Length: 176
Image (cartoon, rainbow, N blue to C red):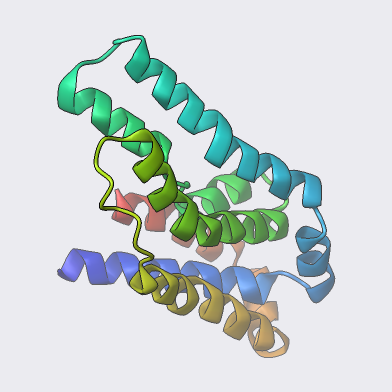
């Protein structure tokens, strides 16, 4: 429980710092990358499920391992790893935040539907409002708070880039 709480705190801090680091224009520009968002959604909810289904149909794996692989192919990526990997690659973090967050919100509805359609168990079609709350309280609100406090803490975050890098990499390590 303590390790989980520390990982949650690291994720909240990660989104707060990225909110404080990114300018409003960068966030708006990131939200406008509709091709990126469409590609992310298509890859997450069409390509990966098709590959998972293909792997199970070709009997590359048997039993629970095949079901586990198929289930994993139906899940969206974790938002914090999407952001951290994008930041490490010096990519467009604002677009990654928007795309990964949107993908995970869609995943709340799409994943149970895909599980019901592609797997034998059909009892997984309920929407998890707890997941919605988690996304809002751990990701969205810290990002917005960081961005709103950018005039106060933005200079500190800019001067201490190593801190953001450590939180990026540390949050992934803690989650794993």
